[in-house]
Length: 251
Image (cartoon, rainbow, N blue to C red; front, top):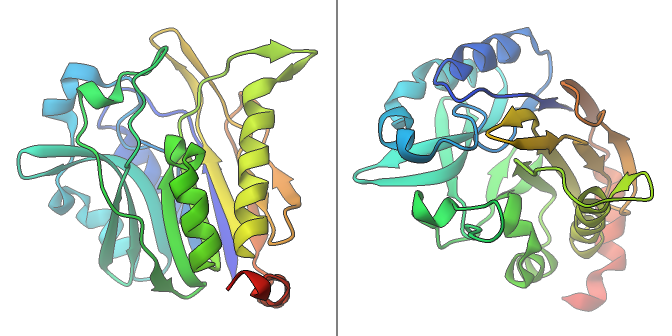
């Protein structure tokens, strides 16, 4: 089964939805993954009250999920609350994850605008036990503990990570991210699929580098830095099963 990772450059506009739908329709993958807030853009700020989506407004994506699974990042309105969410659409149903760790340091001010989620969970898909996390969630010990304990088969990570700290012709943030993603796979025996956005917003430049990490903690594929791109893989379930066997001492 094929997974396709889209590395996009969302604008601060609801019009992103149309572009995402076109990309979904053109894909022949069994699962397509988009970055954090792919339907809205990242530095949405006060426009959030007008630009957040309600789940019923995503009916076109829901219908497309009758033929393939879709995971996309969105500013989601639930009642009076708005969440930085990822939604997994499959067979016309929607599973919603709400970002738990909202950064408020440096250039980040998410907690000023979003409500925080409070739950990590597994759900069944055609790929096996699956879980989702959004950007800052992956830098939490609670997340890594959850992955080590629950041992999913597939970990989907949606991100809008800005570029910072260039050192020796490389990005420190890229090195940090890849270390965390490899740890995710090693601890769980899962494929970890990372979709990070590119483009510029309000002085922030997003670096991309979306990646596919196999259950051994190896980077199978990575996308270009700072460029719109897409990568794909076919899951090797035997590899995941083997790695989980080696991890049995942790159970």
